Length: 150
Image (tube, rainbow, N blue to C red; front, top):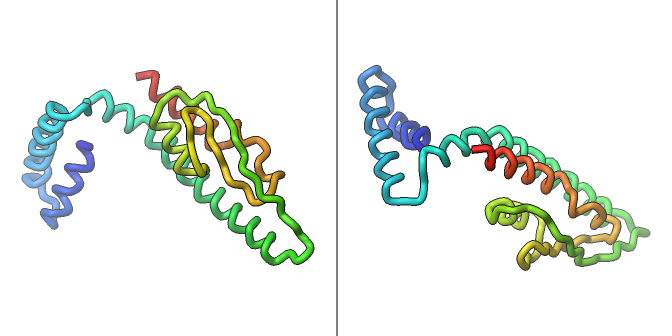
């Protein structure tokens, strides 16, 4: 959040000088610690987010790749006159511990979530295989492990 506040400061100033940078750093630090005092945010959370940033970028890259792959599969199903897909709702359990990881997984692939049970709509039964240990779940586990090392 500190970096975001400082970046907004620089953008709103329109130019970069030593004075603007020094004053922006002081002002950003003051605002950051003020916000930490009134929210549940902390310097430790900021450091954790900074450490997780490469994994978040990797997760987003994998998500985009999987969306493209899924669209290609759907296109193949649509254009194949003899293919008869068997739509299915696939349920699976996950061992993700944090609410944040479960929410990210839910936003990435699911129709609904009940506790640690996820429901995914698949256009074909074969596409439902291996959901409980998908690349998304593995990356989120890695993020949880790295985030827990605070």
